[in-house]
Length: 214
Length: 367
Image 1: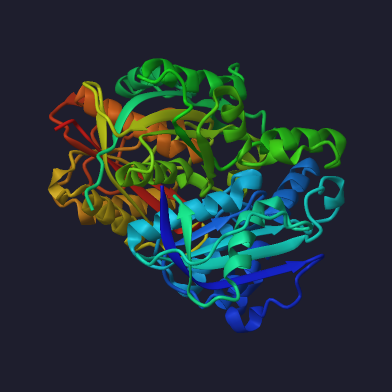
Image 2: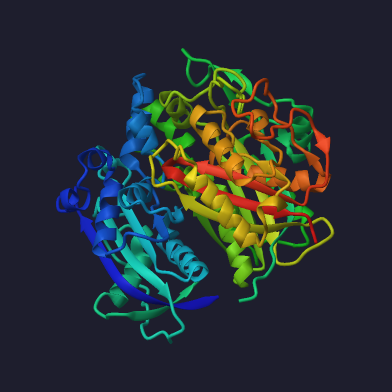
């Protein structure tokens, strides 16, 4: 089932190492909260800010989740050292959008998708469903933050160790006026490709209307 | 818009209390499947729920096959698979890293959450699949999405699978948070010690068509506390909000609810807040219990496992008692000490997670 949506805003970021310009001090003025943010959460709040979105349903996606927290926990267990409670609470896949909800006191539904290379395709489907069932604007964010020591031992999928893509969807009865072309976004993690397709089609066209599968 | 009704037409599960039939026997007999374990933490004992010697991924396929066998489908080629999991394949990654001190032989596809859906898709060939990972609400959220897709007519058949295996990360992680119980957990008990981490697999086939054995998935909703990463809102605003929204989605009144299958992890914070939420919202004081005293907390699988328990409570018209309860912390909520038969039309099942992620799902007897 396909339905039509206005893509009001889009944003993306990609860095070969650590993204240094995520404007955290302005976006997250409270130091205690800012210090706790994971790299994925920093990308998430940066992209949400770029989309001017603070309130509403959020669908977030990541194929690999909070890699640094996971590595810290497994490393501590292996070394027979205490696990940081903060690392454990930050290790769940919904960490990034949860920090977004804390930052903006956003009490709406948050969903996190993790479907491997299909992650952003499924984020688009889930986001479309959430927009249709609420009748409101929904924020979709996909990111990967795999800039951890020794990641080169397993990373064969991306040149960008920190990257993300975001857009907002609002359901509409307008006809679709923008075609989404499926592309290979070489260098980017495949888990971001489907959303990059939509952003590529819509980023230079204000109020683009696209048809998306639920 | 006219919404298609959603029916739970087949299900099966595996937990430390056995398959679904064994689980319900255990719940009504108040016989916990939790064992006291030191294999994950040699210096600490913990109550854990394991279904060893059953192997996790073989069991995943067997549980799914059992649902297919119960159903009116010949295969899953026209069925959407939605998986809820918080752990995915991390257990295998841990073992590789502990042995080799390196990531080199960790397969990212086998590490990811999506290893569950990939395994099932390879075995059964679904029309499409997706995976939800919102910690302990993962499979409750999968149920919510499945309901909405069938409501809209996007799919006629959706298989929801909740699946999480025991692993060092979760057992040791909850120990680091100081919320593990050294014994079988005692949800809602005054002075309770904490929770039991457990593994579980639960699969439910949701369809737009009903049969004589169907239970209806009447409504669902989610909310965010926006309060703290691990501690729930002490005023229970998020928990109350998601139950209220689920009632609205189901078109029900508060007093229609006959039983609350609580999230009830056995931790101080969760149970106090959930009891407050139920006390505040359900002024008719319906019976409430947490079946985690039997199964432990199966994390991302809990929503689906407790959905099956909720369906069974409706089918058997028997309230699940609160196992291991001596003295309730909150005397204003109705925590039944024993199994009893009564008319049960509607059950609400709660799931709450890290990040203040809340989901409530309502099941109903066929009308």
